[in-house]
Amino acid sequence: MTVFALRVTYLTGRVYSAMFEDGDEKLEPEWPPHPSRLFSALVAAWAEGGGEEELRPALEWLEAQPAPTIYAGSHSTRKLVQVFVPVNDFRSVPEDRPRKPRTFPSASLSHPGVYFVWETEPPAGITAALDRILRRTSSLGHSSSLVAAEIAAQLPVAGLTVWRPDAKEGLRIRIPYPGRLEELKRRHERFERDPVKTNRPSGGRTVRYATGTEQRRGVQQGVFGEMIVLRRDDGPRGSLRSTLSLLAAVRGAIQRLTPDPVPEYLSGHAPESTPKNPVRSERPHIALAPLPFIGSRHATGDILGAAVLIPKALSAAERAECWKVMGGIGELRMAWGRWAVSLADAEERRRTLKPETWMRPCTVWSTVTPFVFDRFPKDPHGEEAEEVVRVALGRIGLPAPCEIDLHYNPWHLGVPKAGLFPAAPARPGKPQRYHCHVRVRFEEPVAGPVAAGAGRHYGYGWFAPFDGSGGGQ
Image (cartoon, rainbow, N blue to C red):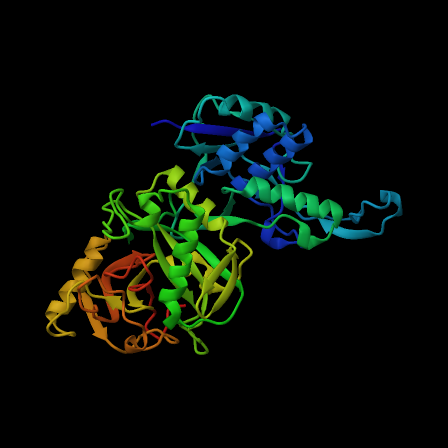
């Protein structure tokens, strides 16, 4: 297996860096160091060294890679000591600035080296460019965290804890992503012009990491393994009944931002497909889903955003292209209104817009939008209908459920009845498809995202975990 590794050595055997979520409180040291922190340090070293254009592709390549595996030793948190420091103010010298109390969390390390490992090999020229940037990198986190950064010639030493990404449970860790370099540059320029907190870099995106002992065993997941969340920033309210029109606008925006011809994994159409003769792709391709406020006593069913579901079979380059395209969407236009949208990031606090809300392992799942049958069952609530659901779940890689319930009423609070949803798009010359709400129970927990049935690629057949009390959110 081909791997590429970066090693960061803490020269003093101690780390000074606060958790991003702590804000100005700075109560706990961040450990293990987040890949996003490493990327920010590399960008700073590159910019301070002159920001050479010939080195830029190395950073753009690094930001496009999936989350790396992290190898790190244990840490022992040191006692917090409060000190008084001058506030940041570029318009006066430190001696003239007021002083405020600050704490700088730190920890002693059992091993000074930390490794970031990717299962890939950089293209020609990238390694040399990264090496030049790494040689300039002198700190990670606070300036007191002196480090030496280099490309590792050997794999990590034994005895380190292995942190693996894309875990179902574990620690949320910030990662770089396509476009992060430009975002850091813009934020830096804004902060220099106006040094207020809102102009600092955002937390960015996160994924869950877990150590080998924390990884849950036996939790099955279907074909979709990742969610990209697009949130509504401005625009009229839209109910779940507007799912089809909203997601049609999302799909249109994706196609406008993608070079022609649109790749199969984004379009869902085979290369020989034409507007007059559409041919469905046999390759795994993205699906779209609404993200509504449901599952609580005061749930309204309003859609707060949309999600793109990424198949696990996509390559790193294809996943990066999905993130790039979604990051370019700033507006959605529907017949009923216009939305200003942006990618949700680590600072998002609404549970509806957090991927783990829709991906957490659960034994019972129920539809948020109606399940669409690929054939009309003679008895909408009989064994034939149940078998259609069972086959549909198997088609997306999930085990057969031990219980299946079908009804026109929903189980999640805030979700409309199935009959209130517009009919799913019909194939030319074919009758309208039948749809209803579904609740399924598995013998063992199943992880999301779960989208099944004939409408799974355009927003119908979207499931959420169900806790048995009327909602799963």
